Image 1 (tube, each protein chain N blue to C red):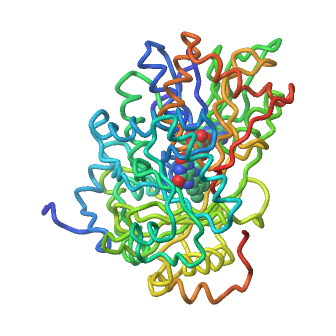
Image 2: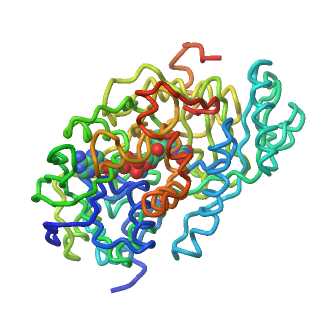
Length: 92
Length: 384
Ligand SMILES: Cc1cc2nc3c(=O)[nH]c(=O)nc-3n(C[C@H](O)[C@H](O)[C@H](O)COP(=O)(O)OP(=O)(O)OC[C@H]3O[C@@H](n4cnc5c(N)ncnc54)[C@H](O)[C@@H]3O)c2cc1C
């Protein structure tokens, strides 16, 4: 199998890296996410989490009971849009 | 899963950076049969959720002295532990928007310089030179220490965990301690969801969970958990050198080696207790403050937000060392929002103190008994 197969296209995480993480004992979904960085990029795991979970199980890791904790916002949002949501004065 | 031993010389509860650093340093000094247990996975607690800021700019002599040494350990960590921690000597830039704050920064700066730090006070024009994208119209003065830095927190945890394993320390994740056990005022071990481990010494490195842990053996801590939220933007080409902090609003942000702007802001209105949720209110507060500080960031997108818990003490100083009322129980908690940067040096000093009695004066001061005796401490440069 090619070492260049990408699991996470946003963060360039390869299948090989997932295998290495599992071999090192980082063998549950949340640990593999932290060890490889998969799911922390532009799509926040929407595209890769299922593939990563399948790969972890295939390499002998823990079958995940749930997906990685989803982190808001659902879609990337510009700071200016978020800033317009409040008129609370900051502390001084 | 590796079976949990029935007996240990020392049980460390919490495999965050604090517990792992203490275990690693004890093992290095020859302590055997150390067992570290954690309810979750590595990097699951505050140690995997923080901003990675490491600085020696503090207002107390102790914090300055310790953080100078901790930064040195951070700087050498990659070589020593064979892992990339993405350390960047960014420098911390503290902005003052009022005379009172400016005076405070100047005082701390003088103390830091006495201790050999290259900290200097900047005026608005200097700030503009250092970070041209900042809006400096409301900046009265700033203090800048070019030798402070930012790191990527996760590899520190893995680095310590790996070295622990190499030195024979057993690290058991997915193992929750239900209670510490005692007989006649002496610790005898811990009960976990995977069985009992007998040990004459239990080190509480449970971060924000420390009060609930020590309560199982009747020890009340004065600290309490406080949710702190943080977020990160899409990655940008490197442009922002310093880690920027504003002690008045608690706004802070820096650019990580991955290019993202990572930051947060003080927020008093969060759910009480151990809550690791996220709020839109935080995003709005932070976004508004950040856009004011650096208007050009308005177009940049936030990718993810998360949170963790600070372990807040009433006097802003940690709770470290043996507990008088319970022989064998040792604390290393109460590190507010700066326990990550403290852990490398704390682990070393606490191990030396426990084994050889070194740094007695520091550990007397940071002991839990100061609350009973009324000898509270201070620190004016707390962020967040
Ligand atoms: C958003 C945020 C930003 C921060 N920014 C910075 C920063 O820039 N610089 C800095 O220096 N610090 C920062 N901090 C603070 C820093 O992260 C913490 O002070 C530090 O990580 C504490 O480390 P710890 O090992 O004591 O705690 P933790 O990493 O929280 O570890 C405690 C561990 O104990 C485990 N545990 C708890 N109870 C039990 C039990 N009963 N049984 C088994 N295991 C248990 C938990 O699962 C956890 O893994 C920040 C914190 C947050 C939340």
